[in-house]
Image (cartoon, rainbow, N blue to C red; front, side, top):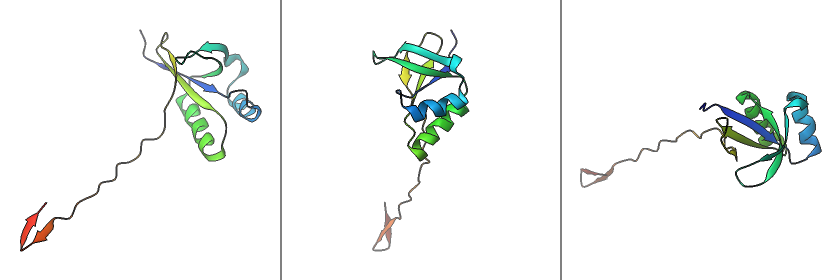
Length: 106
């Protein structure tokens, strides 16, 4: 069984989102009434390219584009809402040692 991820873009019927997605993903990739893990059936745009999906995520964040990204792991996996956000870089905070009476304490 393959563990390749299949990406889907969901517009929720929003006209601007549909126009934007249709410029990038062809209409032959529309999947009607796809059963998702939450029990709802959605019309989804299938997209095999992770870079395109990431671009949609960035556009959503910067311009308020009304889309959601779903993913399916493997050919028979459940279609779930995806969380492909950029991982935050860890900020390292160094504590200064306390000095009391000439002795270091941490």
